[in-house]
Amino acid sequence: MSVATKTVTAPPSFSRAGVLWASTVGKKALMALTGILLSLFVLGHLLGNLQLYFGRDSTGAYLINKYAEFLHHNKPLLYGTRTVLLVAVLIHVVAAFQLQLGKGAARPIEYHQKESVNSTVSSRYMFWTGVIIFFFVLYHLAHFTLGWTGVPDFKEGDVFHNVTAGFRSGIAPLLYVIGMIGLGLHLRHGLYSTFQSLGAGNPAVSQWALKWAAVVATVIALVNLSFPLAVLAGLVKG
Amino acid sequence: MKLTLDIWRQKGAADAGRFETYTVEANEHMSFLEMLDVLNQELIGSGKEPVAFDSDCREGICGMCGFVVNGVPHGPADNTTICQTHMRHFHDGERLRLEPWRAAAFPVLKDLVVDRSAFDRIIQAGGFVSVRTGAAVDGNAMLVEKNKSDRAMTNAACIGCGACVASCPNAAAALFTGAKIAHLGLLPQGQPERTDRALNMVAQMGKEGFGHCTTIGECEANCPAHIKLEAIAQMNGDFLRAVFAKREEAAGGGAG
Image 1 (cartoon, each protein chain N blue to C red):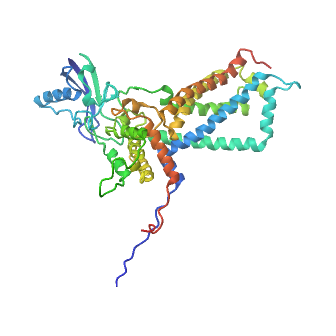
Image 2: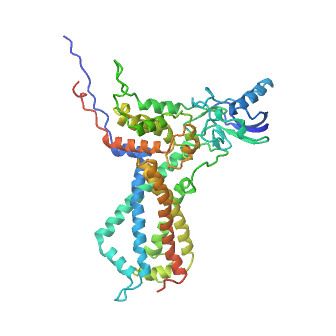
Image 3: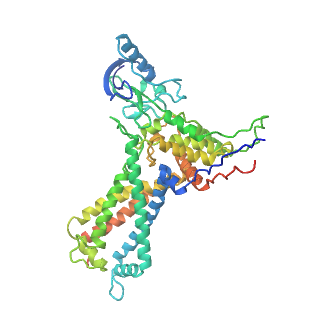
């Protein structure tokens, strides 16, 4: 009697994270998720900064300084948020770079003539508006978080003083205008494209997202820009 | 009508290629490809190499033809193939630049002809669809939501011409792969293999060297088969769901 033998090999292991990261679709989904986190931070940052306009409380302390102290006082919240944001930025940026390199490899010979039939500037220049935002954030951290540049007499914790002093001189307001144009264009397409990247393709939803992404992006960019412009115009002064 | 054509001439994959300029006398009732036929007859008559371009049905349904005219895949007519574009869309004395699809995954074979086997391999990666054999089942035995059957049909209309890749600034094949994944994924017949199909087709799309989708929308605007961006969202959703739904094959293959 012969015995049939069958070699049983282990099925190839399936790494979910590996498959996600290896595919352009998975990477775009990760960029969408990290983009949502970063957008929420942008919104929170903007709402907090609005206190610049609320002046002092009854004790004579600036509201925005009290808010800054509250954020810095709570160390787990501060460092937890910073860690999450740093990881999100890292994933977003590394994925963007790899996809951008892949894009170059996917069309090694450019067209001699190519027309855009139906697309927005913000959608075609996502990578480059992202680069603008990246360098703007580095400058913004050096400007107001670390006080390395552009703020005469920088005082850690005295946000009201730093902001009013930091926007009155030099090229700071101009750099903020460039940064906010980059942010506005990036959000205008990113907030819409996020739905698509995560699989929500119902045209009713996409059309809604396309419309509101433009509104939200414009409002965020303009409100953020109002801070340096208000200081420049002398509406907010120490 | 008299036209000046700057046409991409390339002897083969190894040749660097260049534009060459020709003039041709056409009339407005000709299709674009008939106009090129006239040019080729003249070239053959004068002992020159005719311009190579792909075509088959010339009815806009086979997906064989396609090149870029003045920077627009399939030319200026909305949502149609170049074979169904007629010369009335152009005017006397116009200068047209004809260029092949440009993508690493679509290497130029000759002149305006590119190799689109990458699309075939994506289809092959999709694998089979389980079908019943034996006696035909009653036509209404399997219920399909009207909206889903309409969307499946819309996506099944993809002719695989490659204009989506050609028009995409990222040279992505997301609209093509999305249409193929969506047209089966929306129907009950496509459910048994839905998970593996999404994983394998997306993986193959990456292996072929296509770029990533950034929802720019040029593909949708240039698609002769009216495939919508929604197909890409469907692919993204199916793929992401599949990544989490995928289960290891049980060692030994289970009972059976």
